[in-house]
Amino acid sequence: MITSLTVSQFALIEHIEVDLAPGLTVVTGETGAGKSILVDALSLVLGERADTTMVRDGAAKAVVEAQLESSGLAILRPLLESFGAEWRPDMILRREVPTRGSSRCFINDTPVPLSALKTLGDRIVDLHGQHEHQSLLRQEVHIGILDAFARNEKLLARYREAFDAFRERLRRLNDAYAARESLEERRAVITYQLREIDGIGPKAGEDEDIERQLRIAEHAERFTMLGREMLGILYDEEGNVTDRLGRARRLLINLSTIDSTLAALDTEFLSATAAVEEIVRSVRNAVERMEFDPARIEELRARSAALSTLKRRFRATLPELIDRRAALVEELEGLENIDASIADLERSVEEARAQASEYAAALHEARCRAAELLAPAVVEALAGLGIPRAQFSARVEYLAGDGTSREMMLRPESVDIPANENGCDTVAFFLSTNVGEELKPLVKVASGGEVSRIMLALKSIFAETSPIPVMVFDEIDTGVSGSVASKVGRVMLRLARSRQVIAITHLPQIAAFGDTHLLVEKTAGKERTRTSVRPLNGEERVREIARLLSGDRVTPAAMKSAAELLHSCM
Image 1 (cartoon, one colour):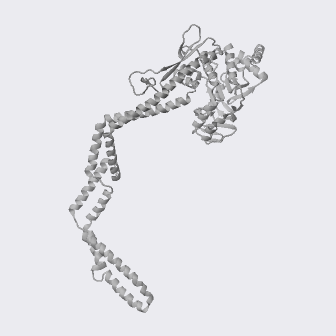
Image 2: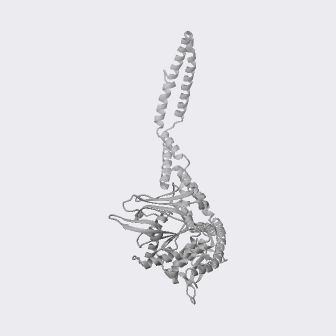
Image 3: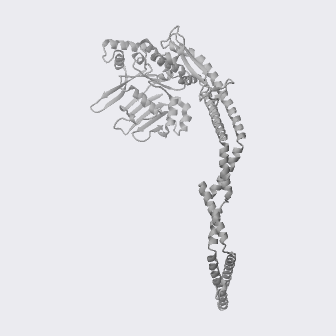
């Protein structure tokens, strides 16, 4: 349960700390006092989207913090730890919304993404907003309500996984069909590009090798001249390096007869001589091989130009061109085998269709069974809410196709039926609240008060199996009054015996059932308007009930009626 809610710099709230108790907590206040601001603040800390307009004028940020007693929420411990948050006996959820930048979320002081706060909040609080009951007037929500009653979560998840696989395989098949349609055009493009590349026949590293060969060929004459000059210095000319080394070595030998320590240098002379002789051999071979061949130079230049043109044509380097050719060959082979690929894909699609169809059929059966159980449960709950002779029906039917496309079809009944992420079904609620009237679509016949009570009836039915420990109702009593309001209050009180219920109401018949009564007040100072919240007890609570009964002017008669109403609801 939520033990406290702290709100700072949020809308009209400067700072409030609200202690919340088990059972049924009712929240009342004059119109415009800011009762729904509490729900907005709670929604924010439970992961709803933030808006910087929520921040109180002049403040840097709004902060909402909810403290929960988590001993009864041990089932959520693995989820909490998966967010990196520490498990504690008292769980603290916090949301900070700055005027600039993104909001920040925390669980037990650990920063978490908004999705984590939303996931956890959905497991803890069932928040029924002021206008949410109007969603019953949209038929598309009926299937979700029936699935919740049927506890179809796991079956629906398995179906959606199978349906997604079917849809993905179907997409790939359609891509293959489209590829086959443009096969000839694409094949022509690939063939032309391969002809261009193979016409040149580039080889790995060829452009760099040609550049090196050209550099040598274009400088052959200078190379020969420099080489011969070098050979003359080292070996061929009179007084060359080789002869001088020989004479120097002979002098060393004579010196070593006088100083034997110089004899070791003879090895160095031999090495130097051998090195010079090796240089001479290498340079002489290079000079003898070198030829000035204008035809070879033109050949190399033409090849280099052809490679450059090819690289510009494909806007690629030589290694990229070689990789491109391999990819084109592979694609061409794939196009040649597309018929076989399509046949494989068609088999794969039908396998996925069969799997999804199996789950769709199971969903349909589960929904039909649930619809039979939901109808009497709703009728019984409505009787307790002042609609004693109502008739209710949840009708489950297969979706009707328009005959234009057979692709997104499943076969839960061995015939093609349209499908979507919820299966092959459409669900519609039908209602009759008056004897003798036939059942008609709820979206057409329900009044505002009836819609509120139907939603409350559904909530009370789901509460028997729902693990969610906190329920919040924001003026669900719209359109009801008098004895019906008392019945609504008793249903809320019954719900509060197994969970924490917080109800914002304007009806005294409901407020009187509260185990705890909170009053929301708005005060206007010289410069600012502030909303505050405080608990009511004793005389103050009687006076607030009297105000709800009679309006702003609280009379002794209203006080007496309020006291009697409170006494009757104990």
